[in-house]
Length: 241
Image 1 (cartoon, rainbow, N blue to C red):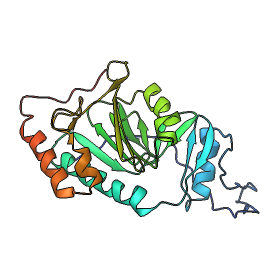
Image 2 (cartoon, one colour; image 1 turned 90 degrees about the horizontal axis):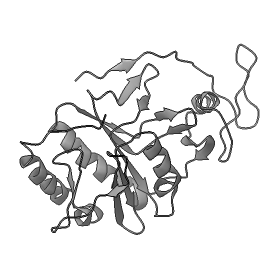
Image 3 (cartoon, rainbow, N blue to C red; image 1 turned 90 degrees about the vertical axis):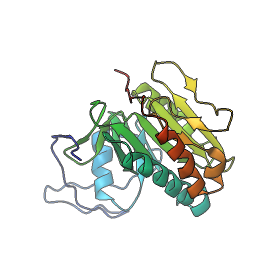
Image 4 (tube, rainbow, N blue to C red; image 1 turned 45 degrees about the horizontal axis):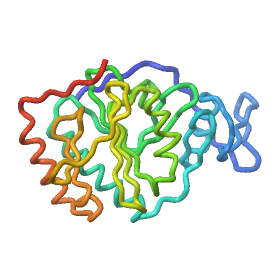
């Protein structure tokens, strides 16, 4: 599978220490990232590359440093999501899936969604020369601790404004699934059908059973996905222009 690469200059910044930044050959240094810092995207990326052991995002120009990740609240749901998306990817030529990848949305937003799914030929998302994802992938997935997390508030607005077409949030504590569709520019919520199944409006066959997801019934989840894939022969994936 070929994935388009957009050329961009790449900068290598040396590691810095938490309290006293190490000077590079040009006499400069980079302090670590702290939640609440207000930075440009360029400065954020310089500090991030200087401190590669931490996970942080830039949201509306403000740094958000991630907390330690728990197993049942994040690790397991994340693994299930990637298994589900991976199965869809394997059965769907022309799409690409990424896991926990830095996404350059605009000058004030550099996020790291749990998963992205995009149509390779649409041109809406691409891999740049720095090996980051740029643009607006058709589907973004986030695992949120609860419905009070950034994912259902600030991040939602950022993704919608930048042209993401579907946004799936899985809130672990409440065991809720929120699936939004913005293809037409309107706020639409994807609701379960009579069998309790959620169906993507953009990707034919991408079906999700919330009950099996929260039960960590991976085999059952994939069986529902296979039902969706089996019935999609006459449907085509169409990204909004």
